[in-house]
Image (cartoon, rainbow, N blue to C red; front, side, top):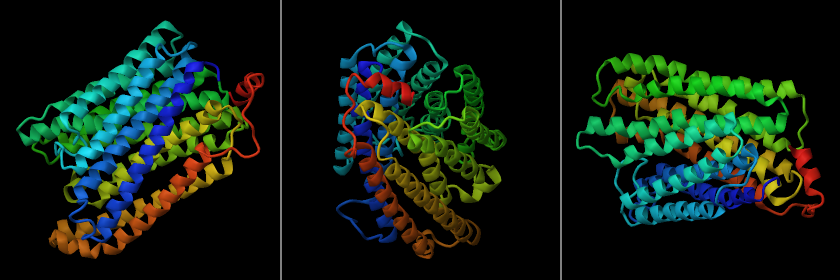
Length: 452
């Protein structure tokens, strides 16, 4: 550990992983309801468990980003975090807001807007938590060394906080409501979150490959430029059928093609940096996650997103299981794997030991990635069949669900296997470290030099 305040990242990572487990357990319950529609009909309706599943996902990913920020900003800025007290307060605010949201959903208290169901007072808490981080991180960077990595990270965080303010605006006109709703939902995950992703990935590449910082930063500029250029107007592929002008059909279709480019650039960037370095970093599990992240993001967010982003295709496919296939693989590849890569890299430092339990960690990588890939393919086939039966032939929605029953059972199986992989990951990263004692203070500098 170079800076004492980097240890603040540890409770953020633990809280994130706990919410990760809540999220995927809720996902398995939701998948069970798809396969057995009468399950928990009265005690736990599907819309409630779905809210818990999606909201826990967003919160634990944010906690991971915040923890990563508190870990990398001191190293990049060459100084301790401005205020550890603020960091602890922010963690309490975010965890309390997340748990309160779960309780409120179980009690039937929510605002009803998909992904933005949080009651007003919880939204306010989330904004307060964001502002605490932005103040703390910005003051640290302003007083220390300025790097491209911290600048892009803060740009993404500030933009995410500002865009979330649209969640407070709920106009009566449905078309207008959906337009501003997509400002949060789309531009977060297909715009500014890509900036956060690129900066965290750049930090990992700098630390693990040893390639000159200036070379990695030049690639970072390219990736960020492509993400902003394509992501902002790429929002148009959500405007096809909500009452917006027809020119969005062209804008959405063209810029949806361009949205593939930043993810493809990340794949080239990551593998080129690793190949160029020729370095055998001791944390092979972190390297595996770091390389797997842009690859799966390219397929999930890029290829699967492009499959149904053209207006002529989306006319038939929107709102089907094809959307679910894209959403699951995109979030897993781009953001879940990113956080898990960062946790895998940082936790040995935070726990004061050499990279540990790497075989188990890499097994968890393959289990989760294989099960998510299988789930995506299953949902894709289900979505194609649903599109044909519902939008072409004109069968009734509930009648079609019976035709998709086999696919729902297959998805449930994939979800259960994914949970096993996630539990293995948590054991590998937070569990006991075999045959290693905590590194003494006298040996810590040598450990940092070897791992960095």
